Length: 297
Image (cartoon, rainbow, N blue to C red; front, side):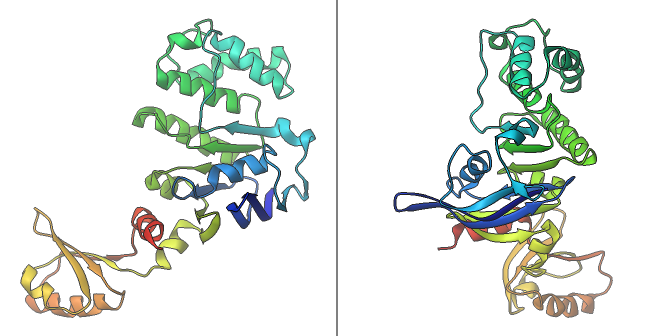
């Protein structure tokens, strides 16, 4: 289990991470979201001891995370780094041995991982001969091939097409099944909604939202209403508390409500005209919440 307690990091007068605390239990996935500059990458670097914190502790299974545990960590940085003139196998052998594995242990895993991530090429191919997407998959393999217990992925889906993104999602799901702690950052809220057990949103170095995706969404109330009913847009516009009405081509409506309770007034209005094929009141999506909170002063 990874525990972060009151982590703080400043650069001069600028506070990059401000009293941040969270934990990730074995077999859990934590999503870290926020605008560029929110403090996500700095948090990862503090966990990895690339930077020294001003305050706070990083614990692994109740003990301070130190150099003796670094071999159990897999880290994919936001800025990828491979040796373009080296072959795939030399690259993976090098990174695996850096993490305490023997050449024999890593060599026996290369074909498995290349097949798993559908890398187009032979293990003897030089990295520079691969497409950008396949280079990224090699970097992902180097992050996972030594079987880490803690995996940190900084924008792992950046540059991956939908097919390769699904391969990565499957690999992350397998890590969960094996009891690995996973933390990743992403700007694609759909990935976060589908994959994580818990999420944290950061802004200006502070944690401003945390919980399961469902808990975070429902904390904003069911202010999105989707209806299909025999009603005119002008009739809906008369209802106090509707902030926006979007009429779709199929005749259905999407309403943005000022507060959840307005949904009852809408329901009472539309049932007057008979059968309602659809009345679905939902909280805002994670993407809508992200835009709301990121735009707040």
